[in-house]
Image 1 (cartoon, one colour):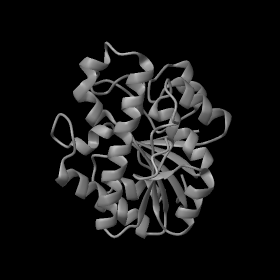
Image 2 (cartoon, one colour):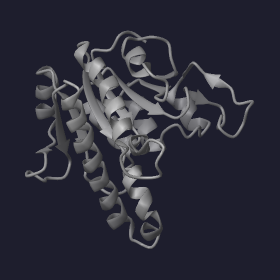
Image 3 (tube, helix red, strand yellow):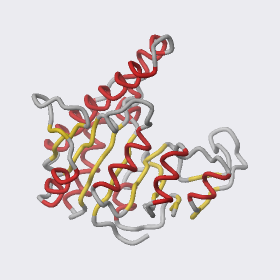
Length: 235
C-alpha cells in the first residue's frame, strides 16, 4: 500500500478505556491523541470514526431488554462523547480537530456534511465523524465505510486488537493463519468477521480498500499511514 494522503481511521471505543472496563482512561486518551497528532502533523489528512463500546458496555444488560432503535440511539450518542473527548485531546496535542455528528446537536458539535468535512481536512484539521450514520440498524463499521467514501479517503483503516485478518480467531486458535492481502469477496465468502457484511460489500462495490492492523503497537498508525506493509490489506 502506498503512502496515504487522506485516511478514514476506525477506532473501537474500548481502546479509550485503556485497562478499565468502561469509560475513558485519561492516560490512554493522551497517548493515543499524541500518536494520531503526529500522523496529522506529517501532512496526512485524518477522518476518524470512534465506536461507543466503552460507554455502552456499562448499560449492555439494560440494552438487552430495550428495543433496537432505542439501544442503537444510545450507542450513537456514546460515539459523540468519545469523539468530543478525542478531539479535545488532539487539540491539546497540537492538532486542530472538529467533531461532526450525523445527529444534529448544534450546541455540542457541527452537523455532518461531506463538503464540510472535506473543507476541514483541506484546512489541516482532523475530523471526528460521530453518531454513525444517524440511523439504527447500521454498525460503526458500515458508518466508517460510508464516511470514507463520502470524504474520498484513500483507505479505510481499521485499528483492532490483532495484527490483521486471520482464517480464524487468533486469540482463540494458536494455529490461525494470517493473510497479508485478501479480497472483500473472500472475506464475505469465508465469513471472516473482520467487519460486518454490509460494510465489506460497500467497500467491495465502491472499490474502497481497507487495511486492518494492530493499534496496540506503538507507532503502527504512522507506519500504516506511510504505506509500510503492516496488518492485512483488503481490496
